[in-house]
Length: 153
Image 1 (spheres, rainbow, N blue to C red):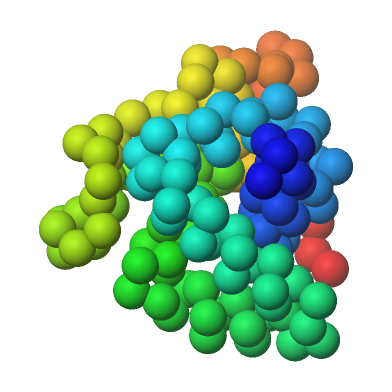
Image 2: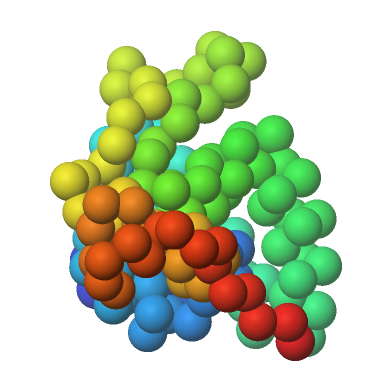
């Protein structure tokens, strides 16, 4: 499969997992780095299995239910999908559970690390809570002196 198709599928899956639109995910500038990290850590075969499962269910009417049942509940794909969520929100790849590594790991690169220097400031955590990251993207002097304003829906 072409790299662009893989990236598009990764972004579509990521949008379903995070609740953010693919345009917002692309806007972080981290999509390629996150896909590269995912592939490097879990291997191409696991990434393709995950994206193939996603492509199969993406056309269904109950995508959320299918996502929970077929990916998040799967022994192989579930921990990887949950790590994708964490990676988008906080910019860190967290080491997968030991039982996952014993059963599925194909590389020894699974450890906890920050994906890129920009990952922290571009994390989805910040727009999700209506704040800017401490020490980056400031709105002005003493902006952290007051709590973030979180709008209720």
